[in-house]
Amino acid sequence: MRAQGSKPHTRIGNRPVLATAALLLVLGCAAVTTHGAPAAWHKWRSKVTRTDTCAQVSPGEGWEQVAGPFRDAQCTLPGKPGQ
Image 1 (cartoon, rainbow, N blue to C red):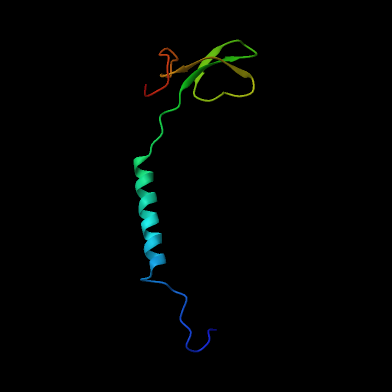
Image 2: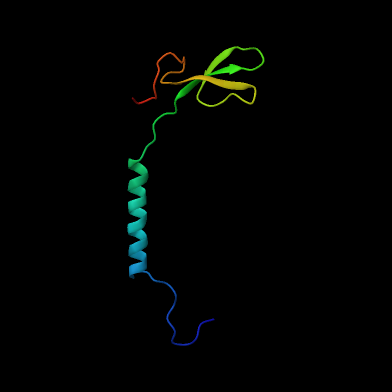
């Protein structure tokens, strides 16, 4: 309950609302314009069977990275994607 004659706590039309709207606009524009490059591929070898595979992330604890980075999923083109 508010005291008689006191103003409500809403600030519609005041600077804090405009500042918040401006901040949201700037963040929205930044989110649209920023983008990341694709992840690089690496060659991984099984510690158990010694077979190789190509993946962007480790297939698990039983694998070790043996080559990379590569630009393609076959691990044949050296370099990072986007270069």
